[in-house]
Image (cartoon, rainbow, N blue to C red; front, side):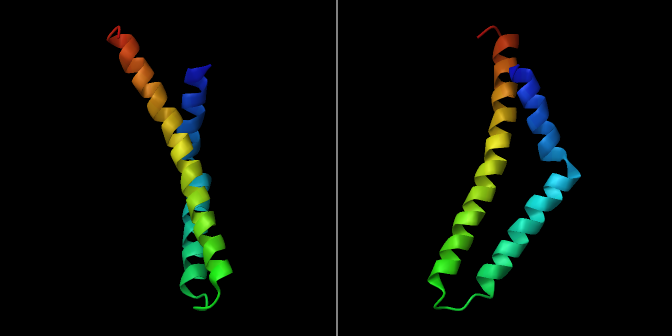
Length: 79
């Protein structure tokens, strides 16, 4: 079960369409922030929260992969 999760997470992280979506969203959000008016604090905060969420999703998938790799290493070394 855990190995399946790891494999699914790896596939997602390497899926060209998902990689493109993450890249495009990040670029779009940064452009929105860059071209927002100085007084538009609410919009800037929303962009910041969106960027953090995007990164948390990517880190969650990466964590699943790394946890699986660590478990496999520990099992191989009988730790």
